[in-house]
Image (cartoon, rainbow over all chains, first blue to last red; front, side, top):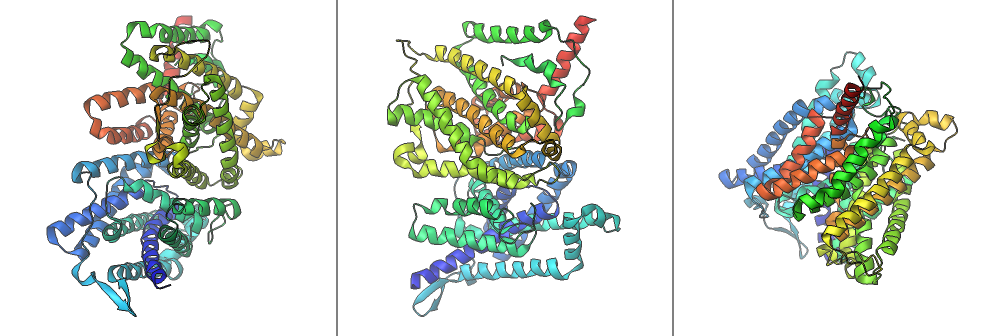
Length: 286
Length: 354
């Protein structure tokens, strides 16, 4: 029971990293209709940029900002150079972003080498919180805190702000929204950049736990896809729920039945596809 | 590479994603204009091993295998309009069938194994097709193909996880190696030079069948579904069944390609089921063009060629080059190479006729 609590915290922090990653993916694809399969590689890139900043300035906070900003710049280039020309062509976007993903992974390998790197957690966040004989790593609690903050922020934007209303309107009917004189292109581009920046934040936040190595992007991309399908797209709550289910399942599975845990995410994924293809909380697409 | 222009006459009828780019003027349907290039290319491939070093002919073998792999995906992508991202699942299933049957089960007959591999691949496709087409939905406009893409990506990964986990049968993450040369029976001794002709023969047969399938009533129904599924439903077609069966047919041919690939390289690893291999199929189709029958064959010549050059000169940068091929294809030649060659060929034919 007591170890289950610690495993629970591990699962929760993992779920929040998945959430940050999947929220970005879900936003770009729910709002812009862009299938960005470089998302996994961008996560890794964010992690490496962050690690580089920690190496040079040994400031974790700066690393988070640097990862977010550098990825937002890359996201803008991605949009401006390529995706702008592929509006509404989903298979083409997929092909393009798959190719860019391979290139990004190889460039990361080129710059930083093949060795896996683990970030040092910042000084204040190392150690464990002792509660009744159990040690809860502070860094994992910190991740949950940041995740909750982002979740709250995105939820607030989605439900309570003008931008959120524009986004929801645009998802329902883009032509109508645009014809009402709303600059939907600007809003959706901003959301796209926000989504990609979140991948960078997830990358550097996850680096002390998951480490960073050039080929980890593929695996993370798959987990992201599973989270998005399980949770459903269009609502931030859905992404959170999907991330929670997959993160917990994966962590507890690895802790108790490590051999079969490889499949858990996929089994849930297949069941969701069969029973409720629009996801647990998703906009009805079908 | 053999069947190159066979589809020239039938091609005008097909309208896909980029139909307007293809000149729709009726062509002179002289059997010479169609048959000549097929025969020429076939003869070139047949006599090629006499003039080239054996490592080049093994490259050509690989081109034929990949070409078949790409064309199998093109049945569902180009003709039925179903862009599957997990086609390696079936390629790898066929390959693993070859490996398991020869190494673990101990059946040595090539033809029996081929048959069993096709059956196994088709069964896997039939099982995976049920959830896949549940998310594909109905109607070109109403569909959200993104979900289908996501689902199919996961299928290949799921199978590769299975291959890693079921260690006693599949060899785990190191895969199975030492797959023996095909045993054809009748005391026929297989060498890599002869394997070239075996692959050539099987590829030709498969391409002929694929050609007949996509140009049959069934194939035209698939094109109709691609263009307007709701209308096909209104005409009384069970479009789900058409898509589902085309998915299984495409899987079976991918299985054949994988089967030949297993005997070609002698090893099968979980990556042969995973995304990296699916992406090859993907590039084959998009670079070759989804609207031209022989497109993936052309692309396979380019991709295998570039792969070889890169393995000689820049082995470390292969993923970069591989990725760049995707980007260049989409940004520079979104219609694919097949359309170019088709246009060129039409010009030649018209020039000769005038």
